[in-house]
Length: 209
Image (cartoon, rainbow, N blue to C red; front, top):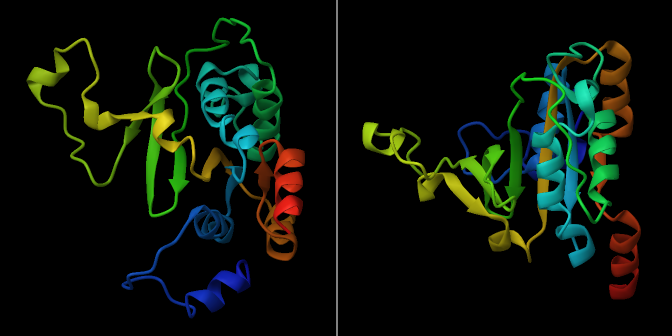
């Protein structure tokens, strides 16, 4: 329907059944086509942007935007781009401000993409820099022995430091269905994309140009 014309040309209008590499943009455009609310947040180009990734993930799972950012407390009202921008504001605070969780509702996972691979983030370890993930290349079943351990099995851990020098993208979704206005906006103006430390990223890009 024209949601991702450039991507369609690149993949010759077909992905299913082909060894095509797709990324966060292709996925969020597919979400838009299906009427699902999602926003891409990218951490790219320079350390000032890339280092905000763990802070953003912490802010999300800490629910720093309150019940406004909860997909269950605020079902039907919380838009992904609004939540993402609110979380991004918190990532600029160097010293974290302890806040009690505003509710006990579960959170939707975050989709994390970097070149050649993607995982689903379902939480964060107490060290605040190791993500809890489901990795499609690793077994996801937990044995009875592992269930009794006090530590998380290594295959579910992804240290942020392993991504520190890579460009990464996150997709944040809500439970909302896109209305016709939002869907048409995505069709004509493109998917919602937020860049961490955008000014520094632009400066870095100009410097290379």
